[in-house]
Every structure is written in structure tokens, then in C-alpha cells.
Length: 264
Image 1 (cartoon, rainbow, N blue to C red):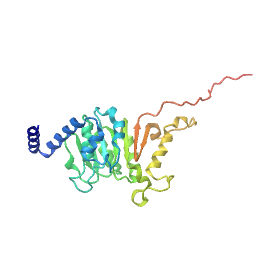
Image 2: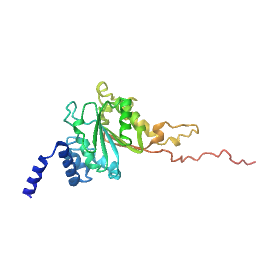
Image 3: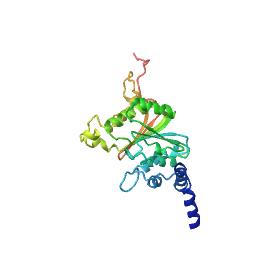
Image 4: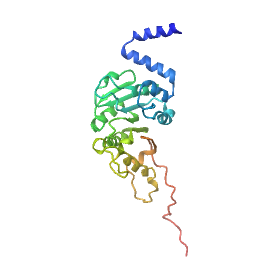
């Protein structure tokens, strides 16, 4: 076994950087399969770990049913700040977890060093509407969006307003690190006032009512885009998943008939 391991190490050393990353991706996929918890730790992401977040279990619950599908997943925030070689851990985790999908990343810094087979990055701001529309057009169909970007409340809200309508009909939109809704307003746009309308948490909480827009009772009520296309919302500690679809199941309210019979 030691000889085999030595031969594999030597063979890996002869590969180019892109070939080496592909080798590592295949190794991770074979070793951990659909265990996203272990994949997150092995890839070094901050989505899982004792001193990190505990998002992997929730991602696995939301994504397991579509894991083998051919999807286009877009993550906002590649990581590593200004260093062009740093970051990319989550992109490689998603590549191993979704074996038939293409993974895309957006960052305000150049992260092209992480581009490889089934991974492509774009340089731009998450609140630049023209840029985001160009990215969506290049991708062709956006099935999953993961906002792990600046975490500023105004950025989180604006990115959702732009990208959610551009997603495929059964898309899944995830938002990480919603704790900034309660942090310093100057830096994060948050507030200690739990009713502050400008925070990302309160923006998304307002969308919950839209799930029941057909029960509002007014015959002339016209739902906005989000009420008409958000079909489920799952809140976890600092994490949110939004399911896209057609929210038109109909009302359970018994409405009076316009041709009701009269007695006399």
C-alpha cells in the first residue's frame, strides 16, 4: 500500500496545476461522495467546522434531490480577498458535490486562477445590474445562486432583486451570513432594532406573507413578482433558502358566488 501511495504522489507531481486540481476533485468525489459535511471540511471552506459555520447539513438537505442533475450553480464571493491565488474552496467543493454540473463564481477581485474544467469565475460587483445580467446570459440558465458575498444588507437585497427573476423556473437561492442584519449599520447595514425595515432579514421576512398572497381576500389583489414566484422559504441559523416556482395553488377561502340564489 505504501508503494502504491508513493507512486500516486509522484504521478500527481507530474501534472499541471489544472490537472492536479482535477485529480483532487475526482479523489474527493470518490472518497466522500454525497457527504457534504466531510467535503466542506476536506476542501477547507468556512461553511463547516468547529470554529466556522454549520451550513453543510442544510445545504445537503436542500440540494440532495438535485445533486446528480445537470445544473448551473453560481456562487457570489470566491474568497481570498485581493490575493488572486487564494480562495476557491467552495467552488471546488460544489464541483465535487455536483458531478454533472457547472460551477460559476463572482468576485470583485480577479480569481481566474481558479478556473478549470467545470469551474469559471467572473470579475464584477454583486450589485452591478448590467454585469449580473451579462453573467446570467453567459451562463445561459441559472439554477442555483449562493450569496456568500459582501454580506452588506443593501447588497444582499439588491443582488436578490436582480438575480432571482433571472433564475430558472425551479431555482434555489441561498443567502449566507444573515447575522449581519443585527451588526453595525455603518459597516454592514444592520440594526439592533429588530423591526428595522432596511435589514436583509426583515426584507426576507416580508416575503413570507407573499407565500399566502391568494388568501389576502381582495379580488383585485395583484401579487408582485416575488409573491408570484417564491414557493418556499427555509430559515436556519444565519442561512436562508428560497425556492422558486409558480405560487398559484389557489385559495382555501370559500368565496361567495356572484350568482348566489335568493329566497323569498
